[in-house]
Image (cartoon, rainbow, N blue to C red):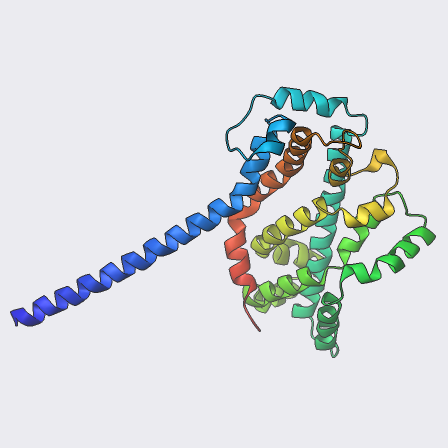
Length: 292
């Protein structure tokens, strides 16, 4: 009997050791990947405090003492209006995020809640559109915006956000697992209208998915450089990525410290949005993966 107990104890100890070893390995890999992901941002913030000559010579993780000088140089640039560029980017990104989320929520709500003959065909069409790159239709998009008189306005950067197949797909998959149709039917029986049910019941239940997609949409709109360069030609309406692309001292050299400082200022709103909504990412992605 004692031999059996000793054997069981050794097996249990060996099992626990393997589990601890696997967990330790997983933690090490995760820490390494986290450090690898944060390394470019660390280099960017550090280089914002260093002189251009040192940046060109070597890589360093030690902050310099040129932050005030780089900031003064940035303020002296006539083609870099930081406040206006930040306000323009905030206006475009916030509006595009709100429009994309609300329209995508309504579309996915209709695909999940309402029963009609072409429901599956409509969803299939949305998935087909998802496979078409946006660059393919940019010429036709530009021509339409030109005919409508919307060139050099923010509307070409905001209105296309209403058609986002990937967000519709994510919201639909999330609704299939988190929105009981019985609640919708009960609201209808109680006399609630369709829009009231959608706004007061469906949207609050979709909070994790909304927060998750809000991060991706906001970041994508904020970092967009391709479309703005096609439709914006007035410097007063430049977004932050467009202003950063103009930061060149002269034809012979680039002031790297100033450029890194501008990049650091550009990503700060992204960090703020991410840290405000990041707690919803894991739950949102996990629930959004529920299949019908």
